Amino acid sequence: MKYCSACGEKVSLKIPAGDNRQRYVCLSCDMIHYENPKIVTGCIAQWQGKILMCKRAIEPRYGLWTLPAGFMENEETNVQGAARETAEEANAEVENMQLFCVFSIAHINQVYTMYRGDLVAGQASAGDESLEVALLQEDEVPWQDIAFQVINETLKLYYQDKKNSNFKTHYGDIIKQADNSYSVNYY
Image (tube, rainbow, N blue to C red; front, side):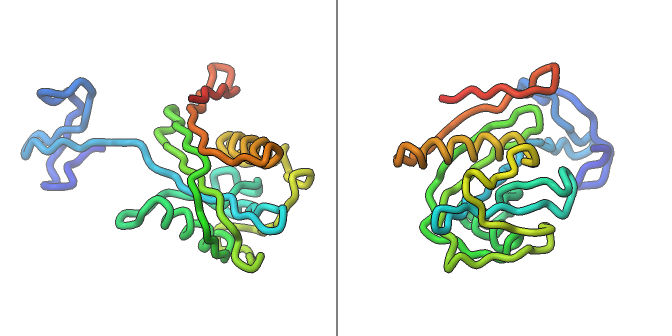
């Protein structure tokens, strides 16, 4: 950041009075510009023992598979964002949505919230951000072509809970290691 969004003057990176982190502070109007993690929300849309997955038509991770998810927008609830992303990416409607997992991913400043819901009438088709969509059983999931570690972790938890016939809400941190592998801490 170089300029203040309030007055247009230059900003400086410094620790404001009463704070403990560096922030961009306007040199003219003293406005503090906070940068906080982004919330990503999405859905495991279920239909007759299968789940809806989307093949990405955009970067990052073009051509790889994911669950319908994306950044929450202003003036919407978290669950509304998950339903909107499912509609945008897969032209699909979901109902009976329940929070399934929350993952903090500090190295990319994101918090993922994934819901589990029912795909209405089993209907879906590729939206603008998807090359294709598919309803897949567990043995059909393209595990080697999953776009993001958080989706891989979400799917593993989903199938574990499904096998146990006991869905619960999961919480964890996905931590990128120095060798670019990941570890997951659950709590």
